[in-house]
Amino acid sequence: MGKNTLHLLLTSFDEADELGPYFWTLLRLLTDEVDDIDAWCVFMATKSDVSMLDRVSEKTPSPLLSLGVRQMPLPPYFALGFDQHAPIGTMSVRVSDLQTLEHVCKFRRPLWYALYKQSDDVTRTACKMLTAEAEFRVENKSHVLAVLSQRLCLEPTLASSEAMELAERGVSDHMRLLIGISPDRRVFYTSSPSEPVLGLGATNLIYKTTWPLIIRTLNQELCAAGLIEKGLVGELAARTLLLIARDYATLVLVKSGSPPAASRVTVRSTLPLATPDLLLPVKVISFLHHLLGQPLPLFDAAFDGTCVNFTHWILTRDSLPEPDSEWGLLANLWARHAALQCCFNQESLDLLIPTYRGSMTDFFDPDRLSAI
Image 1 (cartoon, rainbow, N blue to C red):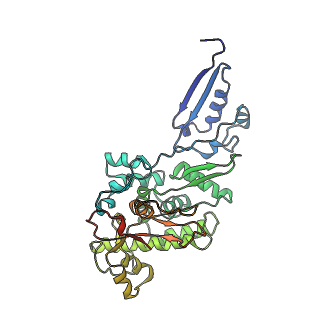
Image 2: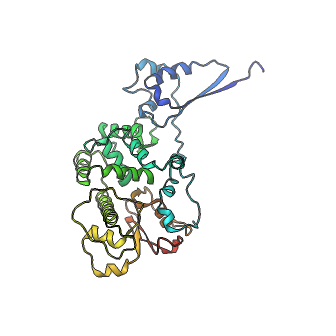
Image 3: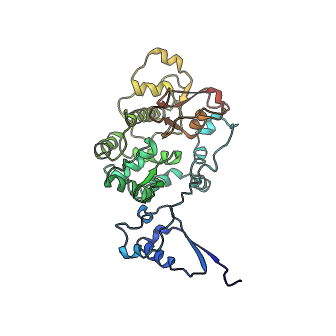
């Protein structure tokens, strides 16, 4: 090798969150590199503390450690490899095949499908990951935020230190994703993207208690305190009402033992002590009964044989593009068991709930899709 040859050294540290405060000590030592070695260090973690991305934080053992770092670490790289197992293109499957745990495990993190192939106890694992393996407590703001984020798409306001702490705990302990950070490393952005499996796990946790207790914490501890975004025109309230109506319709369906094609479902005033099987689609008529009370008889004829299957909400930040194929927006939402809230000032619509008209045993036909 020539005298002026520059050698490259690449060192990676997996599960770097376990370093804790010693991260800064190691970072300072690593920056004292030999002049003829081009050294790169990569720190990887799935449960890292957001404060590790800031040069100086309250959790740094000593400011001298961070000041001793000769160069600011590069901005974090977000490697979010999602939907590797998701079906692409037109699906030659029966509608009922889209309502299985195996199907929903194919969306978002590849972890879910890997776990499913080893065991069918995926939802219990999702429950543990949402609460950091702790017992779910309805009075715990972090627990309620984690659970409802997966179903209602709650977003912290980041307008106060308490809101930022909630978001930070969500990233490190409750399955929120870090999706961006400001140039000065003082503001970070998080999200709870559409993950059907986490939505099922969140449902199991919700029905260990009751919706009224969950709503009380949401209202008094999160909304009233200004810790989460409520929307400009009541979007969060709309998502909540529609989702609870869907849950109640499913609970009645499970309790009665009626198939989705049942022509009529009785509205019940009390909530059965059970967890709804959200993999079951429900009749639009039943969904509307629970949302509005007894609707006009015209609804029965208009929506006969039509079902909804959404288990959680997705939010868009930009206007919707025109779909470019049959396997477009509605088919994608139906396959993901999701409903969509459009961005503010979206032309023509605010919310989109996909519906399917036809037998659940027939092959999936995108032409039978519509929306509420």
